[in-house]
Every structure is written in C-alpha cells, then in structure tokens.
Amino acid sequence: MEQEITNCLEVLKKGGIILYPTDTVWGIGCDATQPAAVQKIFQLKKREERKSMICLVNDFRMLEQYVERIPEVAYDILKFANKPTTIIYDDPIRVAENLIAEDNSLAIRVVKDSFCNGLIRRLRRPLVSTSANMSGEPTPMHFQEMSPQILEGVDYVVNLHRDRKSVSPSSIIKLKKDGTVHVIRP
Image 1 (tube, rainbow, N blue to C red):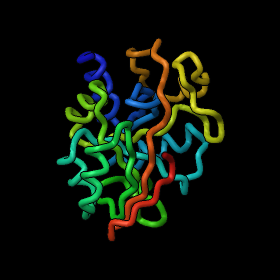
Image 2 (image 1 turned 180 degrees about the horizontal axis):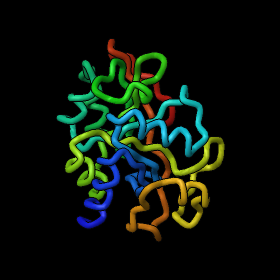
Image 3 (image 1 turned 135 degrees about the vertical axis):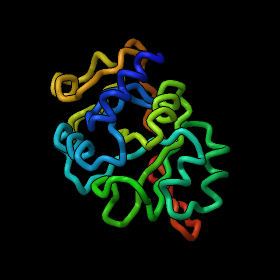
Image 4 (image 1 turned 90 degrees about the vertical axis):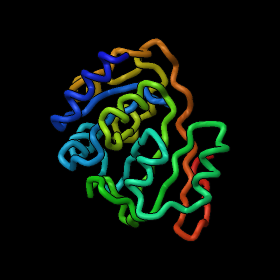
C-alpha cells in the first residue's frame, strides 16, 4: 500500500488525476486545491462544471481547514453515522474555485478507508472524489466494469482492491450554517 500511496503522490503533486478505490466506489481524484487538475476531471467525465464533485479529508482537523464554519451537528452526524456519509457545507475555503457549487457549498466526506486516509494524510490536502464513470452512465461496482475512456484518461490507476465489489455510494446530507439538515441521499 505504501508504494501505491507514493505513486499517487507523484502524480497528484504534478496536477495529475488518479483512479483509486475509496470507502464506497472507485473514484477519479486529484488535489482539490489545483483548479487545472479539477478541470481535467470535468473534461474526462464530460461533466458539466455546474455539477459539483465531492472532496475527501482524512480527519476533523483537515475538515476544519477547508470549511469556514462547521455547524456543531455535523460532528454528531459523522460520529454516529453507520455508513460513509458526505456532508455538503456552506462556505468552503482554500479549495479550487471550480469545485465550489453555485450556492457556495462543497460536499466533503471524512474518509475512514486506510488507503484513502493514508494518501490524504501524506498529500496534506483534500482529494477530489467523483465516481469513475462518464457523466450520465451508471457507476461501476467492480474495477472490471470501468470504461476504457476512464482507464486511459487518468494519469495513474491504483493497483489495490481491483477484485473487491464496491459498496453503495455514501449518504449525502446538506447542512446549512443555521444547522438545518436536508437528507439528499440516505
């Protein structure tokens, strides 16, 4: 696993994009602070830029560095969640502008997967994570279901967990500054 993290870091630090296993499904990712790398993902997926993507962080401390103010309820939601949970926060900071939604929000998940956590910890920045499919196509549940365009369009493909079936995507909750909670995907 350490060699895979090192390989990914080399690509990410140069503004490249990777295909990697997450705690949910295989994802396409890049350094969330590099707008040109984010743009590469939009182009690869043929995804409209107004459709935002999520970011992964490795712990609460990193989360606090990229959101202006985190409502207290977020900590309880994440502490008691029984599956990977992505929260959409208002007022993200220090990330690429083309990651931020029109309503000035950003979806972020604190990831527990050992590979992702180690990669993000060593990168010391959030990692973009979007499903490894072309926009509008189904999300692949197995590595073997990846489209050739995705496999050929990334700069590096992680050589881990290729035989593992992906679990369902994360729950998504929109959390407003005033603490209002809206469940988007249970």
